[in-house]
Image (cartoon, rainbow, N blue to C red; front, top):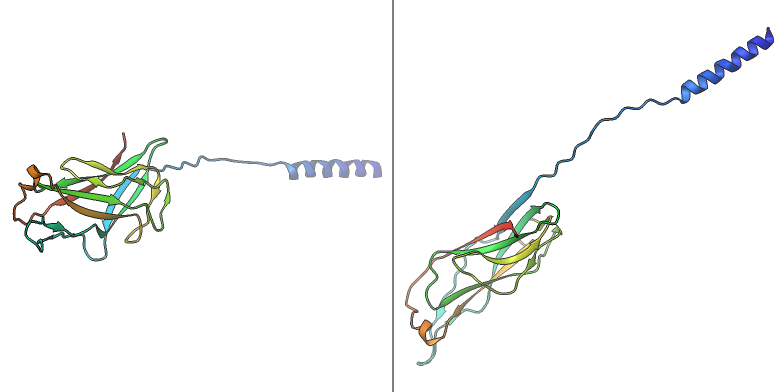
Length: 187
């Protein structure tokens, strides 16, 4: 009987240890959906308006002068999530009629501040027109950070076209233009 009790106890311990070590598992699906993002804003501490004034010559026979390059204190901020191998760009477009004999030119700085990811690459000085022109290219999935001191600082300059046929078209006036910035797919 002792032998039978010992065998029964042994079998019970073996079965219990097998049952105790048996595992049960369950699973479920987890989906992560990252949506495409394309957001752009202009940020400034003291408004978005920029003014240039012509300076009269001091001596007869000289042309008028326009103030030197002017950092605008305008910052381009953007957030972008793109598909694999896709890139975006920022374009600028003049809305309004640029006075004859004058060119409006802009340059975006390298990205500064708190941004991360595949930030865009600014082009050099770009002459603005009534059609979109690229100012920042090769933007991937990234964000520039928000507010001033983040993103790309814009610097403007106004150039007089001093070619004889263009300078003749200058006239006394005050012209207001709008510059439209767009974050778009780079096709």
